[in-house]
Length: 256
Image 1: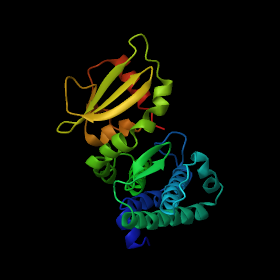
Image 2 (image 1 turned 90 degrees about the vertical axis):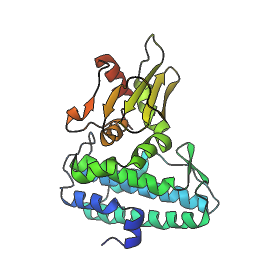
Image 3 (image 1 turned 30 degrees about the vertical axis):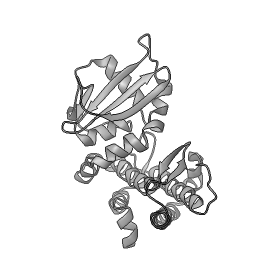
């Protein structure tokens, strides 16, 4: 049983747990090279690190974010130990974010992975991770589509995670003789997500629709594309730019 204050802060936790319980730990997922167990270890490490960094800031002793080697202790646990540890880390994160909501202004800037984010980022980012990685387990079921379609998911991906989200793809992308490209991911009725790529790396922002779109899709598909995923049904996105441009965008949007 998940305490109500935890599910209130992380409403996506219970649907994620149900998805995990419906599968074997060694089942494959849509996240390349990861099993269900790997996904849980990843999220346990994320919850621990989000809580550790925010707690240190609250204590007046800020720390730098550790790398993904923080997941190693969880990967060595038994399935039962991992399950318990993951839930405990989520509960701990909930307690720390509640303290931050009381003690800090929502505009307070906190260091996270080489940049600064606002205090509410820590709970919101865990929520996004739960939504995204639940999709890795279930694919395009109703719960996943409803969550991915939420406007805050696009905003968080672009505004709060955009720069590091493009780092891997930018490093792998050869801009070629043209040097710089700008592409638009469009969902009708919303701002475009504008991604640029060039010799100095990539950038991402929200902007009013202008000119032709590189890819048009529903909001859920657009979030998946930003994170290097692909919807099970490819007819949910549309493009007229041709294979070369699509290949370039997909390379840039290759996720972590």
